[in-house]
Image (tube, rainbow, N blue to C red; front, side, top):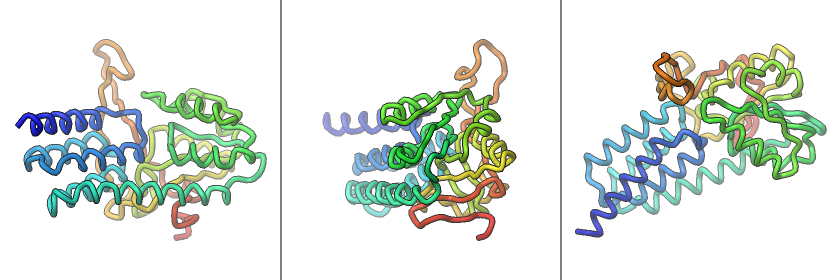
Length: 278
């Protein structure tokens, strides 16, 4: 009985950490979700249904999290005792697909290029580190409200890449300084619209106005064929206290949707995809 209670408490704590996590990217969060399910073979049905709903609501803009949540919940329904095996299988798949996408990144990076990016995508970070000899400088938009871009800039700097951190409002200046923009992805929709951290849309719009190329690194598990840019579910509105003090009303959104006309190409585990010609 004591061990069962401890297991239940650990599962609840893990769930709360996932729900409250507003700093991790979709890949890291998805790995945490898979780990959470792997510890739930003895969890009851009410808890699991509640957990699936809470994870989905907390991370409504992340297709990979949604797909991981769905796959693992289905595995729990089919056979709770398979969760450890299914979790390890899915985590390996995510890591393998991400590595393949990163390996395709040299095709879009000419020698001596300067790059603009936003937030802290693990795929973008790994691609930039892989290609650091090609890169002259990286301009990182800090990414409100969590300032994840600071972590990205610090990591790139530690890897010997000349890096400049910029406030999100300086998006026009970033697009004038950088030769290309590369961001990650949280979802890629059926019409090749891109769901990513808020600020991606203005960055790509400004880059295209400067006749710069714009890319998103993604994996096939982030594609959501059931949605397009007009039908995607509404994004969660987060705690206004993250950006304001007092009682001032604030609309605190974490994501935006970039139309395919502003995206030069997607770099994925399956190669380079040109959204406007598919």
